Image 1 (cartoon, rainbow, N blue to C red):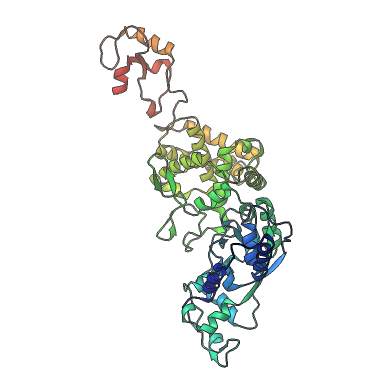
Image 2 (image 1 turned 90 degrees about the vertical axis):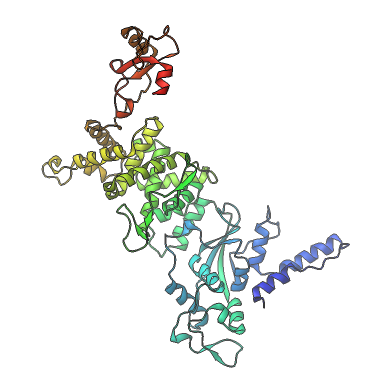
Length: 497
């Protein structure tokens, strides 16, 4: 036996159309078909067209039946991430909500649907009521049951001359009358259409959620763009692809056995759910600081990150190149796993490390992730030494600058870090930005060696392209590219080496 809304879908597809009907008859038939459908079905069908018919006025509110909503669930996005905190309603909440359909003194609040252009996923977007509607769909899919509450022991279904005991029952265990009642339950929705991502974010934050206290990152993520969607997917423990090995590797924001594996921003015991979307904000700041130099002159304040989100929504709605930031995160993965102490980094210190790695990668300087992280941690320890706290103050200059978000604060932190790291002895992280010797430096070494190759001890031919300059003390160990560290060698010897 098919479900009532499944039957309705089958009836909707049945059409008896004469092949010789006139244009007027065809238009009249189309009009009758439109009028026979509910407004929800009409809106979905009309907004799937390139342009709305001139005669159609989009209503501000519509009524629809729950079964009809379920009929269209494949084109309605029920869980747009930009309108949600990182959590899903637990089973207790879902069961109590479904109980509302069968308790007469409870009125289910209206939802908000968005139609038209700029919707990232699906043809229709649930702006408000995501948890409610997704829970109803889950119940009808038989994946959650009603609660075992006394309120559901004697339920009067309209049209029935007896009560029903609905305690703990799944959808498929309901009587036909109870199912039909549920699928015919009438709900209402506000209707928004052709909203730009920025406008949609404004309406969500200031109108639909004006009674809820939203943190800044929740407000930003409501401004949807390719970048913001990538942030949400990645910050929520999605994998990062290693472009060189062509395989998936775990994110730096991973969880292990249901618990966070590192970084202090996680809330213990919540299976990796983070507080106030701090992970999203951290990753957004990393992207902002690695994509643009604006932070050098304008800082990394909350307002700057919000402007960045708006700019991405305005100009890059469908395109975000994550190649560089993925390389940075892959490198950071190696640092975090190789140095256990790195897992104690605060979010801001973690962000700064990522930005420094980005600068090294852009300069094509090869560094060892473990050595570089050890050096970074040592620099932080040195800069946080209580001996450096000025009189009458409680923080060192580094710690004070880390508390701010102005350009002067951010620039000051990086200046202190780079300077301190340059004074620390380490092997593979103190690399000269220049890797290749000049032809003049190589030629000077060639004559100083009496044309004898420093590798094979055989005489070299006349100076030319086949003569290479080679580091006496290895470059990878942090040694400089200077004339006093240059040997002239055969190109073949250099390649074999």
